[in-house]
Image 1: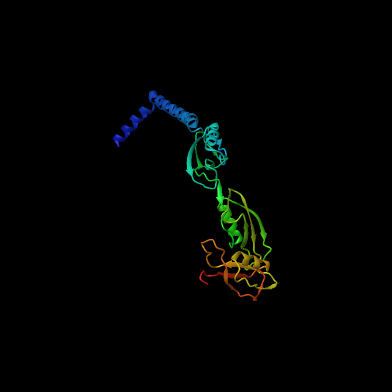
Image 2: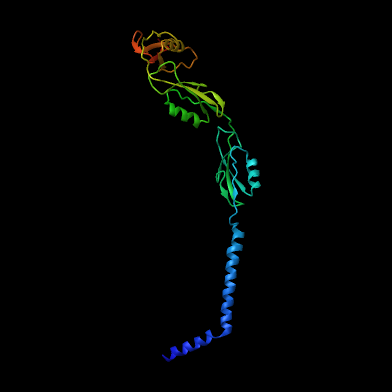
Length: 256
C-alpha cells in the first residue's frame, strides 16, 4: 500500500511538470501536421488522386496510330500479336481496358494487333445447313450475310440452305456478302419422276430441276475428267412424288 501511494505521488509530480506537458503537446502538434501533410498533399500527389483520362478507341487503326493516340493522353501501349487471317495485317483488333474507360495517367494499355496477312477468305459450303447455322458459318469465316430468300424450287428439308452466291470455294474479300436461298419444304403439286439414266450428272440435274425436283449424286465423280453418266436412279422413272422430292443418282460404273 505504501509503494502504491509513493507511485501516485511521483506520477502527480510528472503531470505537474510544465516541461513534460509542453513536450507531449509538441509531439501531438507535430504528429497532426505530419498526418495532414501525408494524407492531403503527399499521397494525392503521388497517386494523382481524382485525376483520370479517357482511353481512346484504337480498334481498326494501325499499331503506330495506336501508340500516337495513347501518348497524346499520357498513356502507354503494350502490343500483343494475334493472327486473324480474315483481317488486314497490322490492324488493331482489340484493346484492354476498353474504349472510353477512365484510367490514371501513365496507365499501360494492352493493344492486340493482327499478325495475319490474308485479306481474302474462302466462301464455305453452307448448302444443306439450317439457316441459322449457315449464317453463323459465314460470320465465323469473316463474311457477311447478304440476301436471305426462299427458293422458288421446293425441297424436302425445310429451312435449310438450297443455294448460295458466291459458290462454295470462291475466294472473295473479307466481309463480302453471301446471298442464300432456303427451302420452304415440299410443294403441294404431284409430278412424275423423269428417266435420267444414261444422262450426264449435269444433264440429269437440269432435267429434274425442270420438273421442280431435287437431286443428289451419291457416287464419286471419275477423276479422269470424263463426264459421269447416270447408271441408276431412285426412285425410278414414272414414280409420282411431290415437288421438291430428292432423286438419288448413281454414277455408271466404268466397266458397265
